Every structure is written in C-alpha cells, then in structure tokens.
Amino acid sequence: MKKLLETFCKGIWKENPVLVLLLGTCPTLALTTSATNGAGMGLATTFVLTGSNFVISCIAGIVPRKIRIPVYIVVIATFVTVVDLLLQAYAPASLYAALGIFIPLIVVNCIVLGRAEAFASKHNPVLSILDGLGMGLGFTLTLTMLGMIREFCTSGAVFGVKIITAWTTDFLLPGSAPGAFIIVGVILAVRNFLKARAAVKAGKVYVPPAGLDCRHCSICAVGKDDK
Amino acid sequence: MKIRDNENLVVLGIFLALVSLLSALVLAVVSNLTSQPINDAKKAREAAALRQILPEFDNDINAKAVYLKSPAGWRIQVRAARKGKKIVGYAALAVNPSGYAGTVKMLAGVNPDGTIRAILVTEQHETPGLGAELCKRQFSKTIFNLTEPVPAGLPPNKYLDQFNGKKAPAKGWTITKDGGTALYATGATVTSRAIAKSASEIVLAFRRGRKTVNRAFGGVK
Image 1 (cartoon, helix red, strand yellow):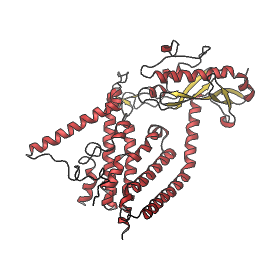
Image 2 (spheres, rainbow over the protein chains, first blue to last red):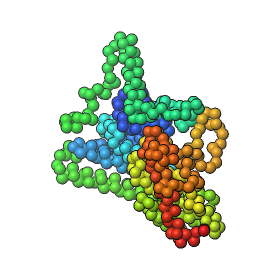
Image 3 (tube, rainbow over the protein chains, first blue to last red):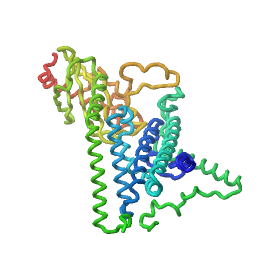
Image 4 (tube, each protein chain N blue to C red):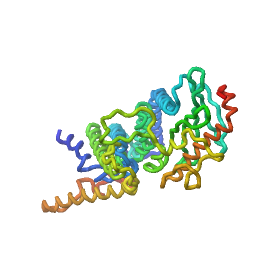
C-alpha cells in the first residue's frame, strides 16, 4: 500500500516531470500562455500517459528488446489519435480550438516515452497506471501554475478573468516562449536552491533522487546494451 | 528462445507489422464511432457562427452557394439568408492565404446592400497574444463582473468591427501604416493587413459580382 501511494505521489513533487526530470519542455513552453490552456494540455497528456503506461507494461514482456522503442511509439501515437478524435467529437468548441493543433505534439512529448521506457516497461500494470496518473497530475499542476503566472504577467488575468482591470495593454514577454523559458528557469533555480539548502542544513551533500542521475537513465542510451 | 531476446530481422519485422495492424484496427473503430459526432460538432460550430453574424433568418442557408471572384482572384463563397421570402443578408466566406502563419479564414455577414454587417475569423494560426488577439471575439471578464451573466450578441473587436456598414474605397481598405484608413496593431502588422485585405476583397467581390448574386438568389434591387 505504501509503495502504491509513493508511486503515485512522486510525480507530483519529488520527481515532477517538468521541474525535476525536465521532460516535455516543448509543450511546457508552447502551451502555457494561459492557465486554461495549460490545464487542458496537462489533462490530455495525463490521459495518454496513463493509457500508454498501462498498455506498455502489459506488453513489455513480449516485445523484442531491439524494437521496443518503435512499438512504444506506435502505442502512444494510437492513444494520441484517439484523444484527438474524442476531443473533436465531444469537447467544447473553445477547448478544441485552443488545444487542437497541439494534441499531435503529445506523441513526441518526452514524458510519455520517457515513462514508458523508464517505468512502465519494468513494473506491473497497477503501478504503471499509478505512475502515469501521478506524473500526469504533476505535469498538469505545473502547467496550470506556469499558465497562471504567465497569464497574470501578460495581462493581469487568471483563467481568463481580469484581476487588475486597469491593465489594458498586454505585456508580451511572459506570453512568448522565451519569456516562458525565463520563468521556468527561475522556478527551477528556486526549487534547487531550496533543495540544496535543506540538504546543507541537514548536514548532507545534495544528491539527485535515486535513479534519476545520468548513470541510471537509459533513455538516451539506446545504442548501449542495457540489462 | 524467448521472443524478448529475438534478434531475427524477419521475426522483428512481423512483430512490428502486427503491432501496427492492431493499432490501425483500433483507430479504424474509433474513427468510425466518432465521425458522426465530429461532423455534428462542426456543423453546430458553423451554424452558431452564422447566427452571430447574420440577422435572424429561417431558410436552409446551406441549400445553395455561389462563388464570386474577388479582385485578387480569390473564390469567395456566398450563401443567402432569408426571412420568409425576403433576403436579409448574405454569408461570405473568404480564405486569405497570406496571414502571418498560414491562411486566415474570414466569415462575414453582408447586408443586402453589399456592406459588411459583422465579421468573424473562423480559422487562423496567428501569433498568440499578438495577431490572434486581433481575430478573437471574447467578452472580457473581470473579478468585478464575474457573477453577472454574459451579455448577449457578438463580443466587440475594434479591428474586426471597423468595416461594418462602411463603403469601401475603390481599391479596398489598407491599414494606416500603408497610407490607408484601417486600424492596425503594432506588432501584428501582417495580421492587420490580412484582415483589411479580406474585408476589402469581400466587399469588392460583391460590388463586381452583384449580377451573379442577384441571378443566383433572385436578390433585391
């Protein structure tokens, strides 16, 4: 039970996909122009991530190791297309208008492939679903938060509701991708500063979470023969 | 030998083909199930847009469409809206190929006298926050009017509303930066140009194609 909870919770803060794993930076920068867009993209990714994690953990045992990446991509692309069709058919017009062109981007979102390779292919379906949900929730919360910050800095509004009514001319930097990059950088710096300070205070040396340093990650080591 | 460790190219190829086949099957089923709702949603969007830009009408507006050639050579689709027998307006659809990022689709309600009644941009890929703002119609919500009901009618947009009811110059509207009269937004010059150009092409196409329109719909005057 504790392990289940831990698997679910780690994606929200300890191994947050955006702020710790630094995966999925493309949608993070491109899509968080408003809080609504960020939340919508986060939820769509959560659905794909959970679904693909489940299927991949089910089939991981029979997929030949040499072609596992193409097989995973096919599974993920299928899920994304299904989400795209469902959104077109049943989502409110405004949501589809905002997200429509970004949905296909989920295919190449590193979080989805990253979790498939690093987690789902090595764990059972239940844990994989929880991992997908937790990572998705962490992604959604981070994107929503970033969207709120950017939307507020651009036009003084949050979720499309103007908080500062006198703010009539948009400030364009935080609304653009470079601005998002700067804001993400500041958040990362603050987070790492807090982590490092907590470690120093406890009299320890700061180390990245277990299994998250380069030595343990197999994502970009496809050519290497891993176990 | 377990299939996991198989390295025979033929086996791997067959496996990949099977996976793709399975995925194609799933997609075919989902696509089949959603094609009807997707069509309905598209039609509902289109109908809602038409109701916004035209006065009240009661005919089947999609029953007939004619195409006018605009001065720049675009094909502008025109449909007539009637209330009873009387034509109350036309819906004109213009596709401008030269937006900042691809095409800008403009749907305009045109009065029977050939002036613009209201404009909607139905499809665009302009820069969010800049060009896209010029194409957007949205009531602004603030924390002070959050609980009030959304006002009825078309949300105002000064860049799209500036052509309403106006007579176009002989060569169409150009933005003030290019020596014309139309408003433009700094940082979104290309989008401003595209909007002015689309509105002009629609009005000018109506001016040139009056006879075609009248012949097709048995129009007024």
